[in-house]
Length: 321
Image (cartoon, rainbow, N blue to C red; front, side, top):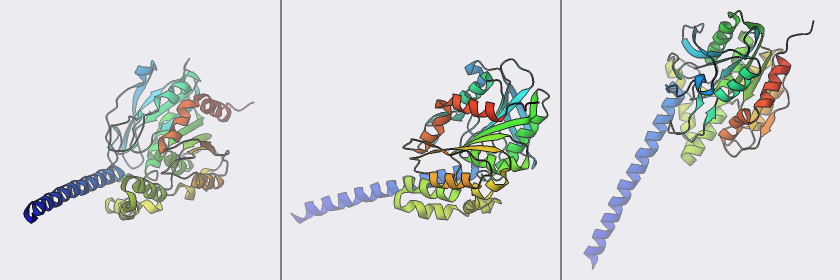
């Protein structure tokens, strides 16, 4: 009787060992993959263009102050002519199209940046969408710094617009998502005047990483986040714990900011966004969006395009004489 039971026990132990090893391997592979995205971004191909929405556009290239070459699209307004402009800045690890669900090993959803670009085009604004460094078809320049170095890319985009004779260079606004929202907060003080900006779910990166890793890796998540925090320094970048847009918000000056945050976002914090708004000299009340995940807050712009267009109409209007 003993031997059959012993064989069964050994078989079960072997199966559990193989299963546990496979699970541990999958866990480690996912941690390595997501850490690589954090450090190096994503070189995702462009999967659509403004032509797909019937929009006219021109491929553009410009160079940041530190030599990083950036790629984007300029969409002129309906009717052409001299008009204000809005720069759209994507999140991590997206590109100028936005995010396409399922491309990466991350929990995500579709985010369409061409939808607000179309609304702004129809409302009479020049629109510039571009790939931040380490993303899309712009140059690689690791590590990703979640807004600090990317601010140079935003300043270069604004500089390109101001060199276009049909753009009213004193009437420029911006729309940024997540890392792109951080980028605006760090970048706007370096290229004033920027009349107005919409910052969708900006983040203190230490909070984001802790919450994201807990969501992805359970009780081990905070330990992984703590281990990852200093890694960008190995590539000459800032530690993740130093990336806090609230520290830069007081320098936004006369730029009017509209902050948008998902109330149920498990990776971000509406309390921290409210603190960020309080540190901003000219901030409107934070727009809290009902949501159950990170991506619910991002959808606000696509669903409320009229409100976004009205905000820019109001803030980028030509001064009365």
